[in-house]
Image (cartoon, rainbow, N blue to C red; front, side, top):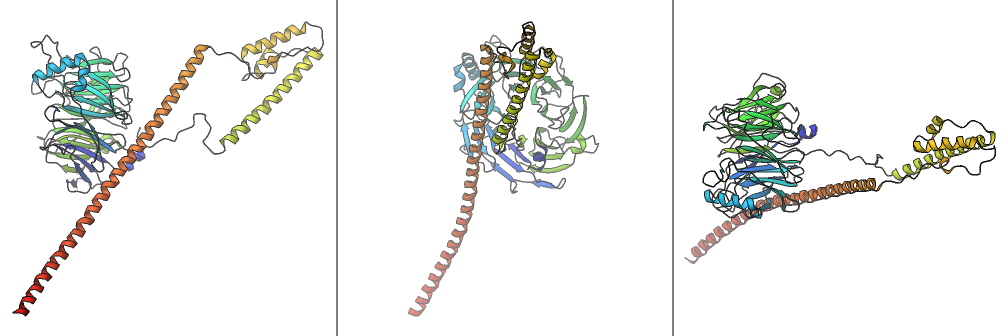
Amino acid sequence: MVDPDAAGSGKKILAILSGSKVTVWDLPPSPILGRENSSDADPGVRSFDPYPQSEDAMPISSLAWNHNQMVIATSSGIPTDEFAHDNVVLLSSQSGQKLDSFQHDWGWKQKRKFALQQEQQWQESSTQGSIVNSISFGGKSRYLCIGDESGAVCLWDLKKKVRVRQFFHNPIGGAGDNGGKCNFAGFSSLQVSLDPTDTYVMSLSPRAMYQYNLRDGQLLGSLEVPKDDDSKDKQGTCLFTVFAISNLEPNICAIGTSGGNIYLYDISAPHGLDQTSTPHAKIIRRHNGRVTGLVFSPENPNTFLSSGTDGIVYVHNKSNGTRHKVCSAPDTNNPIQTLSLHADGVTCAIGCRSGDVYVYDLQYIIKGGDMPAPLLATHQSSDPINSLVFAPPPKAKDPQKPKSGIPSEQHNEEKVTQQKEQQQQQQQQQDEKRTKQQENFFSNGSKPPSVKASAADTTDKTPKSASKISSASATEKIKLPLSSPKKTPPFLFHKNLDIPTSPKRKKSMTDEVREVVREEVENLQDEMEEQFRNLHIDVINQFHRQSQEFEAILSKHMAVLERLSNENQLLREENERFRRGEEG
């Protein structure tokens, strides 16, 4: 869960993808309703070009925020065969400086025979196989998930700079169909994502949803469009278009279709998604056109939003199946192409084909109001809006509680020592009392202490088996002549019995300790690397600001020097005229 204070008081930053540029828009804290119009010239708007090396404007296919608002990942929409370049670029969200880049191409896919066959079949029909369609960060932004046009999905470990997982969609139809070629029409990866628990890798193609296990890299299952779905798009087909996973209920996944239907599935089933999976819920014909956006509420697990090419945004209640129209594009002929919801759960942004971005306040609608959602702000771009995503708010770190249960203070060691001394004194008094009872018993021949009393005295100190042995030994000694005992059984005075631990138990405990230590070390390494990365980004941003200030000062001095040079030239000309006048 996101800290409400952090979500409410932090800046709302929206990343907008249109054409060949990425625009980062800092929304005003409290805009005047319907009057906040922004343009690229506004100080709160920054535009970046991730691929300046291209002569022509290079279209960008996808973008994603990392978990702390510092980095934006982008992917180009040009195949690497056509133009050799790093088609995945990581940018600083403040300055637009390139932090890292790498190339997603066909080369790595040749490691698998099946992938090589796919490559050959694909290249016979198209050269677009290396186009990256979707990218997504996972967890603490250590992993970057990439899905491309050929149906290949790979997972990059940004810490180790290597690919750690690679998956391939199964072609629709066998190799025997279509003259020995696979049908790649519904094969590409439109959208990829790691679930909020970093357990599954989800990849959506037009005809199927694929679910992979991140740990072992195996395909858990795939799910095609339900056969009983009779909704059709303009082409007369029904395809998957977009999906979303709930952060509050990570097992719930919503999938939209080109016919306007929405399906909810449980992805945590033992065997994952397959054709036998029944929808958790089915919302029929909610949009008169393809579903273009799905997003779950970060505050209410029963609420999610959807947008479509019909230009309408609906809020759905999955518990009772109801819906409400919350907002729409001002122009009914302007399809909504993308949708995003801020972590506060009430600020919604939509991007349209016309290049318009509208930001609405949904708090009254979500609470059950009938009034239309008020318009907070707008932005205009020259190209259609392909994607827009709100930056995740910085998460407030919970104070770490020491695993020992002892508060972290300077005098912990003294407190623990005092507690141990008190426990030892109490234990010594109990031992002396117990010894006197035993001596009185053996000397006076009184009745032995009951089994319940023995058990009560040694409840936390001696196992139950030891209590039974103590009672049995005392009963045997009653039959002996009354005399001083030669030796008191040692287990009456020892606090604990040394019970040997089985080797299997020792091994499991050792494995558990080793696993805990390993996780703690990895978490520490991740935190240190994140701090170094943030420091590096801060240094770059500071250098960028200083360079801008230096350029401004330099240009100012150059203007002064140019003015002085012009005045000097005028004085020379005037002096020359005076000199000629004197000679004449």
